[in-house]
Length: 94
Image (cartoon, rainbow, N blue to C red):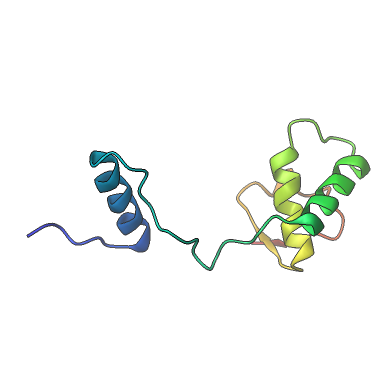
């Protein structure tokens, strides 16, 4: 009997591994509900942050993440709080 996955992540990885062995891409056919779309509103917020902040070079991904949190009025959980301290209006969790 094969080992049973201990979590959703492990189940996903197991599916990817099995599909790759068969020559496919693997993974789920639809996205999990916990993913937040990066749409026009988030893109506009990220662009505004990029123009507004001083130290932006190399932070494009961080600014996109911050833009999502701002658009959804959600606190951002991060282990790198210093990377986001200069983003106005962004609430950091933890």
